[in-house]
Length: 250
Image 1 (cartoon, rainbow, N blue to C red):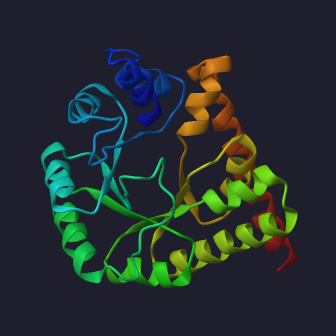
Image 2 (image 1 turned 90 degrees about the horizontal axis):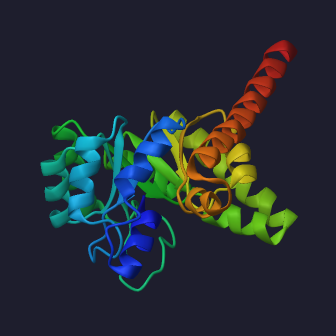
Image 3 (image 1 turned 90 degrees about the vertical axis):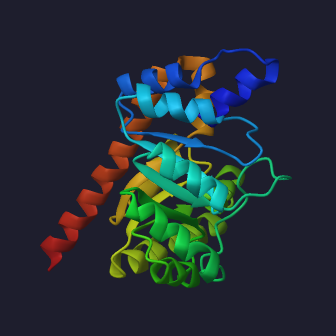
């Protein structure tokens, strides 16, 4: 819902309303809603989170920086889930994954604090073995892999890079699953790349925002949600087909 809030804030109006957009998305088949409450409040605001928590009939995934201020807000709001993400004031959007491997002292207390309040915690990380190991040491039950590099390679049509980045995602998903960590993914996904990533057997959830809101300009939010669900279903069907073939070969 960040991108709906960005458009609203550009004119200082009360519309478009992120909560109304969330309700339309849920009616069209979205399983949950994600909103990033940034430290500078550049798009989503505290009031938006309060309303989303109170007014939507679906799980709310709150993206926040790993800071005491944000953890306190999450503990007060009690969303279904919190995804801890890196954050820089200068960035336009999230540029990479959290350094779970090098932030032991900062992350572990926040992960525990959120979990103690019944909030599902995920760490937004790059698909890298060191980061998966770090997430495991912090006790995070979920990781969300940053798919930005894979999506950039796909947009450029760089086939070797596409194959390399997809292998990174596939290997990382296997490692995370072996460590008992639930696997999510997101950033930069469109219909085609979402279908490909959804084919990974370990994948449990995709978080997709900017493409959906951008595409909604042309076809409407409800239509985009339905088309995205269909794309993800194609990826899951491909996953099932590969698994069945492997079982038959055995």
